Image 1 (tube, helix red, strand yellow):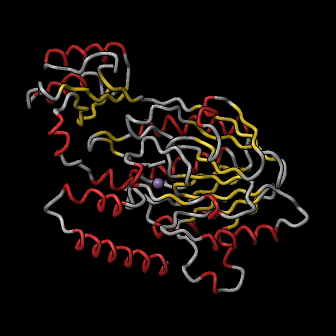
Image 2 (cartoon, protein in one colour):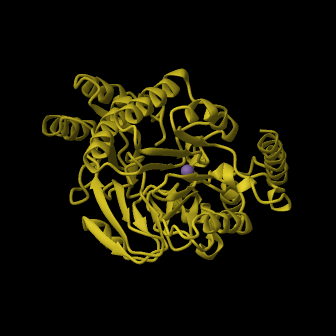
Image 3 (cartoon, helix red, strand yellow):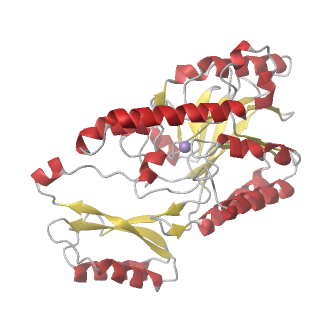
Length: 404
Ligand SMILES: [Mn+2]
């Protein structure tokens, strides 16, 4: 959900999230699902502000109150603090909302059976294994959870759902930047025994192993055992040009067919690149003003990013004009200040260091791998120092994880 996200260090997205949850709540009333499952990245940052926490509380209390028979399961993603999400778990449990932040302990496989039950929700109509983000692959743990459910499900034959927050091999990761920066997991490491693996982390809705174009259909019928990303609630960047949706999943029994209906999300603000790719890039302040004014007249809302000609840069103070124009629209039209530059001379292209921002590193599951691959572009950085810093942070996180 990425609650509390701020784009371009300037725009909060509260009204966009509100617009999304209004639709989600209506769908809950309309389709009366037995369960609502959120697979990670509740918040955009590990230490969300009071306003974001208040938003989560208000929204989920409302959804729960209006749909009291629906089980709600929410797990932490890589953007969340496992222990902070877990800290609220017992309070939410009073309202029948399962909130899971901390994954099974590193030594859980040495403990007798029973630890699994903290992660298993029996809705009476089916089982949900609520697995939060784990920084390493743990196939034995996932299989132990599935085996435990198999025992509980004996003679019942109810559908089994498991959550996961990771990038699975074979997925389409458009919108996640350089693919080399994503750590992916083979699907064979995710265990056997689920009918539906509800995946989070990748923003594009898709079923692993099936044609991505199927996403344009409203409904699909799959055999049991699918792995699917429902996709993010909101577009997170200009690169996400595909439609976003909520997956309505229907299953009769364990091992039976899985029907997926895509509920298309109406977004308050879309992302645009100006001018369109059929037009030449912008070459002057006058051209830019015209393009932006034209856009503001045609569109009530949206995020836009400019395509500029590298050889005729805009004057430095032009950005103030842009904000003047967009602010007159009452914050409905928003500006991405990182332009796309075209017609860069070859040699500049070759020597230009790829610039990455902290926000981009946060989107990666394996930022260290990305840094290793691009380190030659940053002569000022010492890879050994960075590696040892990462190791120290990882050690600290493991310690925190096992303490909670
Ligand atoms: Mn994520």
